[in-house]
Image (tube, rainbow, N blue to C red; front, side, top):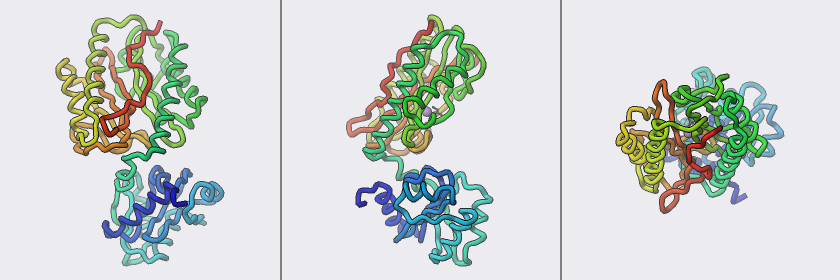
Length: 360
Ligand code: GLY
Ligand code: MN
């Protein structure tokens, strides 16, 4: 039991309650709930106090919760929120931390209105996410597997790709293959966009056929709860000078940003490294999003690597590096790897080669 990672994480939370002047922490967000308990059900709340942790869920999860967690489990007879409020009252907790992100006003009010007079909910958002930023070796092993499954699905699919395939058929094939290779699902809706459509950084694959021009493929797998994320570029037919030039600029920016990743580096400095290169190529205004993001139990989690993000990177953080350039009416280029911060810099986990692949 001593080595149960969930118990160790819960202890960290319990030991830091006093410093936050809290008597308890109500964890509501499912990735945080999973991080602290191992429970993967769609409905649950974890109440962590200095001495105890209670997982509250509903009767659909009676067997599953007992299998997945060593916490005390309480099956709510009605709404989970009501059971959480009752537990807070029973334990006579006064200041209870909660996670405002993604909690509806309804849910907040349902709990708040049922608390004893002297009890109050105190916003403690981002606390568990902060704990999640540095990954354990076991978590990194899962991210590595997720990256490998994702890259294999990409290779196997692209090897058979023919010009004229519809964007949505290629996306479906990529997702089908990642599942066949062991992913439980994609880590986000796969992006496949051809020609001018690729100028939309988050394009939705449609019925359009991939004809002559750029194709962006942005995909990730979820393996044992952990995400991967990769973007690679294809070109149907031989690329012209403009596409080749843009591709080289984005690749140079991506390599410069990767080079800037090391423990102690500020996230904004990694972003600036990519931006500097794109500016030198006259493409700074075409780079319209941030350079990357953390990933783990969620596809997007802290730290963010954008212009204004001043967090210092630490060994064990897993982040994406994904600069891009987007030109309306022509197309867009993005190159994205999943990397892990190591003592000496970073390791690129994504094994997929970064050439602009010609199809047909
Ligand atoms: N790869 C999708 C995203 O990072 O938003
Ligand atoms: Mn990404």
